Image: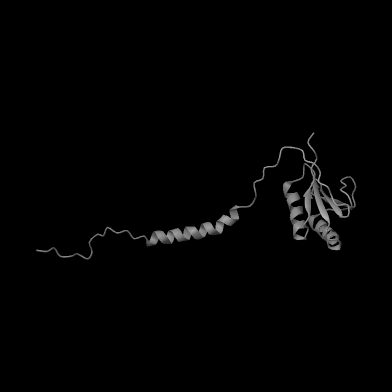
Length: 147
């Protein structure tokens, strides 16, 4: 005799549909969070003193200095000058407005930034970001040679 077929007998198959759903949810979470995790670029700077780059004498140069207390002052001329001061401002918004007016008058202005050693990194980056939003395309950083 033949054994009757039981419809509710245990099956040896595995239901993978819930696992696929979980995998798709995790994939969406990783796709959304991955761009938020990459904020900076790792850069290894050379350990040697560098030579100054030649500058165009016809180009207008704006030297922006950031003080330790967060104040900004700058010098405008045809050469890089860190000793003199043409104008100054107390806050970031005032500095951005005045420098954007200078950039609007002459678009090929080269901007150099120098910051006091005791200045917060955030203050310098905020100044760079404000200049970038204002349309500054030529930007350089000034350092002193090691002694």
